[in-house]
Image 1: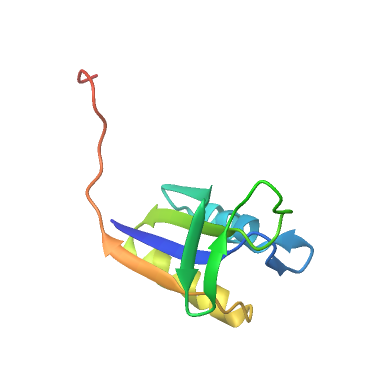
Image 2: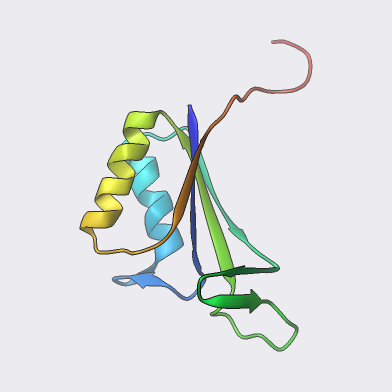
Length: 104
């Protein structure tokens, strides 16, 4: 299993939907084990600083989308995203996962 994390802005859109929603929808349709979109309090990258403030309107707020799946599925998701002409940075790392608590 691997974790694929995309970095984007809240106001990025692909067609009529937010890009983070499109990414999660594609991953779900491909059969990923799970996916989540997170709003960040702030961040920086090649385009400078992005920080949420009290006066910030929805828009330039960093969002991370994380998807856990097998490597082949993540390869497909990256390919689909590239073919859809969505240009966003990503990070991919191997993961181990499980559950805490008493065994079922």
